[in-house]
Length: 174
Image (cartoon, rainbow, N blue to C red):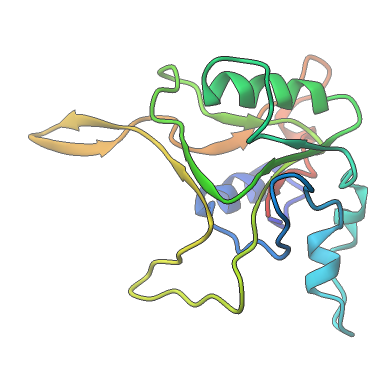
């Protein structure tokens, strides 16, 4: 989970995107624990605001039936969770978002988090890369004779009609 309560912190941390998940489960039984509390169960404690996330309200994105593309499924599931919050759970696998509409990213709303499947053991990054069981692929575009990431290849936040960006918190990636 990205420890963010304010939009600037959230945006900066979401740009990092790959945060080590902390709980494994199979695709038929999505995890419903607070992975931050589970991981940091020692005397040092954990960010208490993560208890505000509705960890038990989980949508398994591998089996979610609404929408025709992964991006449409993301938006529909996120909107279902917008009242009361919850978890968009992506079990182990590769999720290709390279066909997202231009100018749109994976925009989270207040109280909604993305959770991937946890790696086994204690993963270590080799050569700056961490091999996680849940992977998101984003698109590239041609520029200057090469390929560069498309604009909006990100996970970010989106205020609803009653909030401003400064009021969106309790979001992240676990």
